[in-house]
Image 1 (tube, protein in one colour):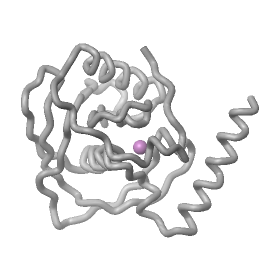
Image 2 (tube, helix red, strand yellow; image 1 turned 90 degrees about the vertical axis):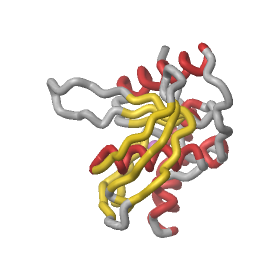
Image 3 (cartoon, protein in one colour; image 1 turned 60 degrees about the horizontal axis):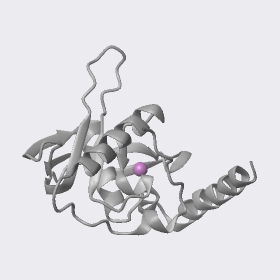
Image 4 (cartoon, protein in one colour; image 1 turned 30 degrees about the vertical axis):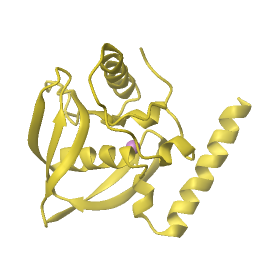
Length: 172
Ligand code: NI
């Protein structure tokens, strides 16, 4: 089931999410709903607070090429445990900040640990777009948005546009 995506600015997008203590059918359903919501948007990553759930849960799939096999990943309690000194700059966007994009510099490679949908501990090295995406999504769990990496002028400009967009949408 698709879930509505919260738009910035929203206090729920600024909160630190709680670790998931034990997996439950409810949490698995939330993860599946988040994947459906992400693919439908369409997007390559989504974090639980973006659908109003304050759990440390993200989903992602950075396979973008037409015809390539999708690789949906569900990560409970994801954590960056190592990062390369080498950095990489990508133009980032966010489903909670539609139509706004900006360059963000992050470590090129990261090692991430997480608990998968079956409750198993996983560890993997990500690079390229995957590395950027997984760091962007984990940031969401700490109440951090990609615009927080920008200068105050640019951030305020984007936030003003978003306030207007939300006002227009509320009016219908
Ligand atoms: Ni985002």
